[in-house]
Amino acid sequence: MLTTLKKILKLADRDQYAVGAFNINNLEILQAVIETAVEEKSPVIVQTSEGAVDYAGMDYLFAMVKIAAKSPIPVAFHLDHGKNLEYVRQAIKSGYTSVMYDGSVLPYRENVRNTQKVVRWARIRGVSVEAEIGAISGSEDYVTVSEKQALFTDPIEAKKFWQETGCDALAISIGTAHGPNKFIGEAGLDIPRLRKINDLVKVPLVLHGASSVNQDMVKKTRQSCKIFGDCNRLAKASGVPDKQIHQAIRAGIRKINIDTDLRIAFTAGIREAINSEKNTIDPRQLLAPAKRYMKDTVRSRMRVFGSRGKA
Ligand code: G3H
Ligand code: 13P
Ligand code: ZN
Image 1 (cartoon, protein in one colour):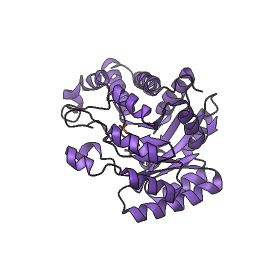
Image 2 (cartoon, helix red, strand yellow):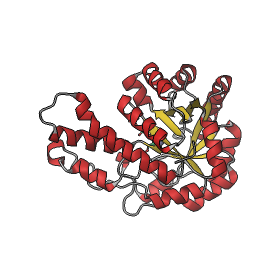
Image 3 (spheres, rainbow, N blue to C red):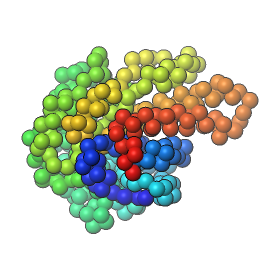
């Protein structure tokens, strides 16, 4: 059933697990996420970025999710990284049960002002709001460790921001990055910083850029890199190890965002099908392995997050 982020995360907080928030752009990705959530009896957050909205349309996405949410598990439908206030307003009006307003790169006061505005709009319709303080770098940025640390969330500022905005969940920056190239060298999340933030902020915390970048899946994707051309892009791909995900959950993370893992699984499956099913022109056959790999990915994440059996 469709429910709010606030309700899903309240239970996660009570029982000390995290809920996966999976980015979807089309029917196959949505089905892979929901079917697996049902099989694992796990609550789930389905989210669409502004890019997904541009690609598929808010109405189409909502219509698909409304049907998917008839499943016997709690499903939150969430706008990911809403930076344009118009998208956020539209999402609240269109039936999303939660929205993220991401003003993390704006000056502090402007981020507060815009987040307060979104919270006001959302309250009217019972929609939850995730906000962000501290910026998370992107995969292609290749920032150095010290450049990355400069963007980390300051615990005192996080408390002030949460109190001033009244957001329902807070995304923080503690060392992850979006995309397949998260770390130069060793993976390292700032767990002591996370603990401090969790002591001061009394709403559930969100970890972005948290894909595991499963090396078997990367290998499958790269098997034909000479034909398809990711020989450089994925050569040093690395994600957040499960051990650090466990530490982050113990230190207070309750929502974990996953997109890159699904992208890699989807691409591995598509490449495999194109290479092995040379005689087919049937899109369903070409998409079948992609869906299978995405389901494996979602299942593995739900088990690591501890949300299996919680629905
Ligand atoms: O955090 C960002 C997600 O990976 C969404 O990416 O804007 O290309 O859909 P996208
Ligand atoms: P990944 O790129 O690690 O999957 O992170 C996705 C994300 O944070 C979406 O908001
Ligand atoms: Zn993100």
